[in-house]
Image (tube, rainbow, N blue to C red; front, side, top):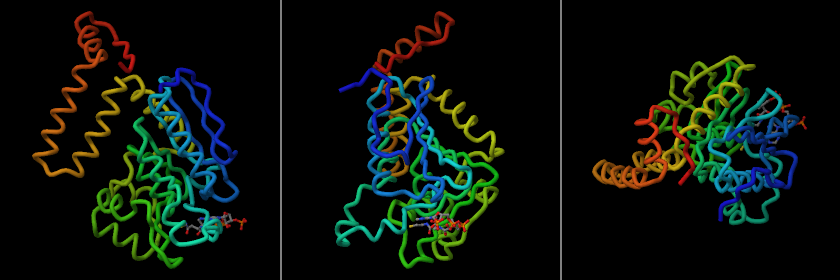
Length: 267
Ligand code: COA
């Protein structure tokens, strides 16, 4: 069912906030005193926030960022990991990377400071990543005795290539923003005080586009990375046909003919 109001839900914790301006939602990991390390409560809040953004007509793009300037997120709260009664309970935890990856709405990670472990995986689970000059990225799990479990190897090797991914996964050492840009982990690096504004401006551009087409473009990108080429091409043609049949596509063609901006209604 579609919620037509834009009042954000109660997320059950002050450590994740959700603000909506225009058609852009900003989700903030808000636990700066712990470098925005993610607790189970925060995972639940992220799931709820993403679900709400996906089902609210008024939200068409999401910016994910971290409060305090020192960190996007230092990953899972290490102390909270002791709270799982059994390995199976740990295995079946609500995963915040899954939450972002499940988003149908386009997502932009605005990374300032540390993006470590699950923080890096969360950024990698967003569609677009922007960084400030202060950003650093790392997979430190190996220094603790385990490995990432939120898609680290798959996403890192896809973005940065197998050798760079192995270098990060096997050493646990951090790379800086310039290296992340060179390795295609991020699309842009900007000054720290410009990061959020740039992410929101980019989100506003995406939010102005046809929303069904934007959601379909995400599905198509995912398919392009996962399916054999012939299947990916056939699927793309089908997805294009779905978009082409929407009211918004008719509006796009009409607006072009009438030389005016289109008004997209997610129909
Ligand atoms: N889980 C829980 N708490 C964390 C955390 C995490 N992942 N990362 C940082 N914190 C906490 C610290 O314990 C500290 O809390 P305290 O003041 O109560 O002691 C606070 O955040 C500030 O971190 P601190 O370590 O004092 O800052 P620093 O500048 O010296 O070091 C880091 C910064 C990021 C290098 C360091 O905090 C670190 O290595 N964190 C763990 C990162 C990690 O391994 N993530 C993967 C988890 S699976």
